[in-house]
Each structure stands twice: as structure tokens, then as C-alpha cells.
Length: 481
Image (cartoon, rainbow, N blue to C red; front, top):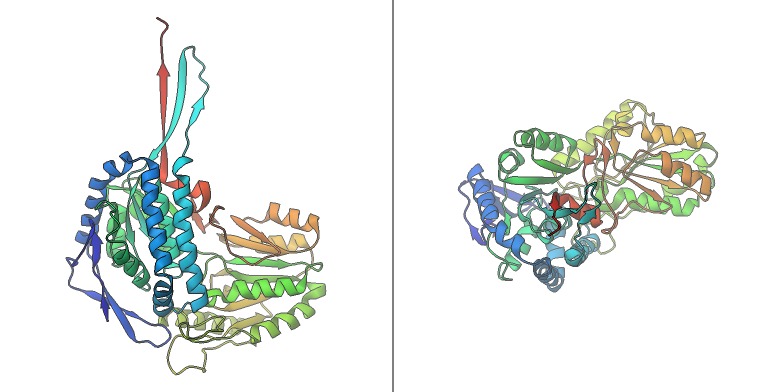
């Protein structure tokens, strides 16, 4: 069984805490590794290492910093199967999707390395004679990245690649539910020549390690991917030093299906968006609004599609569409939400309970619910499981109003063949992302950012990279000889 250590200042070291946390395989419930239950002292050691390394790292030309990102990408590709199997085993992500995450993570490091020659400032016109105004983009300093358990490896890259290419050093806190892939990768890159302290990885709870990393005056920016509750705690902890935060939080993505939609496309896209990683993705389609005159046909088609979803062991299920939930807590939460929805009047069309297919593991059936109301918890709160509630609507205006009736604002989608419907919805939907006639899944060159309680700031593309930069303006007055 693997026993991981903290990665601080270029070395793997024992934690100053003697406590450990066991990591389970969600499909079998067996212990597969241990991580340190890190301490405040661990967090401070990592921050000091990052602080000391940052000036020299910033002084390197960006193209030299990029060379290390390319090395990280190459190591991922060389070990892609090992890393995918590690990911599948620790968090019950089906092996095909796990392989996609590993491969896209390698691409993400290369993509961000490509910004080395494109980080730009501005020359601004002055109101004075003989003056130039220069706006420079400079690193913030030390970046802290707090990673989730649902896409732990890819989100780690979002935080590491963007911070390192811009001249920041970085401290990463993996999720205590799924740290193994990140820690295995850290062992693989130990000898690529990255200067000590540029990247540090510290395991531990959010309340101890995460809080210490966020509250420290050393930290220049905290990037969190997690729950609304976790985001609120980050904001509280960051307030003391007015530390910049970038937060991707929960979602309750609506999918609108209009009467002129390609129904086969809509059904396939929505089911794909709902059962990917067993519904544990913040931009998943979480609720569906279907125009009343196609509702019966849509329900017939989506019922068939949901019944065809294959649930298997993540590592060994070659044809699996989904697998177990990540933990017993997550399984209990999903079960309780469905039971409460039933008490409120929802009707179960498919699934609706824990899977009886497996002797062990945290498996829940793909679930389709009808007879839902807008005020139900199942419509208003994030499920984070393979549960899909469906409602009818009359007009597109009504569907958009129902979609916007949410405290979340991460992703949304519309299925229609009508240009006017599409333009109306994409203009009026109060979400950071809207997908048209396709599944919910963002691109690394876009900008993944939520509105309302789904977060502040964002990731990916030019704008995600610039989250890790601050501006310096120089007013250069010169005089004639």
C-alpha cells in the first residue's frame, strides 16, 4: 500500500503531523493508500519555500519557464496508462474518462506553455506632452491552489500551469478524497530540474491546511474548485489580508429542450452530461425543461436512454458509462435527496435507489424524475449524482425564467433549430457558459467562470491565465534636451 509524503521545497518529507488519512477505492471500499493529515506547520513550510523561490522563478524568461511545463506534459504522456489507472482506482472514474482526463491534462500544460511569448502589456496615451504610460502584467507572487476530488488531476494543472507560466510559485492542496494521482505525478516530476520551492504539494484537511494556506500573508492568490460552503470559508479566511480569490463553486445547470429541437441529439447530449463521472461534475446538466408539446416523446426517448446506461467497476468495466460515487457520504447525500424529492411528490421513472448490482462500493442507479416543481430541493440544490429531474414549459420566456430561478450560474444549455430561440436564450440566460445543441463540457481555450454563487474569477484561456497576473502602470515623463 502506497504511503505518500508531503512535497515541499523540492523534496518528499514527513509531515510534522503524525496523523494519516486512508484513501479508499470507492468501488471496493478497500484501503489503497495513505496521505498525511497535514498540519499548519506543513502549510507554512510550503509557503516559505514558495516565497523564497519566487523571485528567481519570475526572473527566468517565460520561455524557460515554459520548458518545465513541456517536461511535465511529456512525463504525463509517458505514464498515461499508469496515471489513468491510478485515477480510476482512487475515485471510481470509468477508465475511459480517466484516460481522457490524463491526456487533456498533458495538453493543458503544453497549452499554457504556449502563452510564454504572448503575455502582453499596453501602451496608453497620456494627456501630457512628453509622457508615455506603460501598463505591465506581473506575477502576483505565491499562488495557492485547492483542488477538488472530481477532476483532481486536470484541475491541478489548471492551477499549476497558469501560475507557473506567469512567474508565480505554487502550493497545491489535493483533495483528501482523491490525492493519489497528483502525488504519483509529483514523484514522476521530482527529477526534471524544477527549482526547489517552485511547486509544493501539501496534503491535509481544508479546515487545517487549506485555512492556513489561505490566511497566510505570504499568499497572493487562492484558487479553489469546490463547494459553495468551501468558497465561503475561503473568502472569510482571505479577508484578513485582502488576498485575491478565484473560485469555481457549485452548479445547477439547466438544459432547455424546445419543440423544434433535434430530440435524438438532445437526449444523447443530456444523458451524457448527466452521467459523466456518475453526475459528479459541476457543469453537468442538473435539470431539464422540456416544451410541453414534445414532452411525452422526449420522456419516452430519455427513459430508454437512461435505462441503457451501463454501471460497472471503474477500472475493469470496459463498456461502463458510469461507476460508483466517490464516497459513502456522497452516496448518502444523493439517496437522501431523492427520497426527499419523492416525499415532495416527484415520481421515479428510472432508478431511484442504491444499486443492488454490487456487493460493495458506493453505487447509485441512474435516476430519472418527473412530476417535479420549481420549488423542490431537487430542482434548486446541486445533487452531484446521476439524478435528472424533468419539468415542462410552455414558452421559451418561461423556460429561461425557470432556468434563471437559481442561486447558481455556472453552465446552461439549449436545444433548438431556431436561430431566434438560440439567440434569445444565450442572451438572457444568467450563466457563465451556455452550450447550444451539445453536451456540457468546456474547452481549455475558453473561460470557465460562474455567475452568482457559482464563483468569482475563472479558469482557462487567456482570461484564466491572467487571473495570476496583476498590473503595474508606469508614467514615464521625459524632457527635451
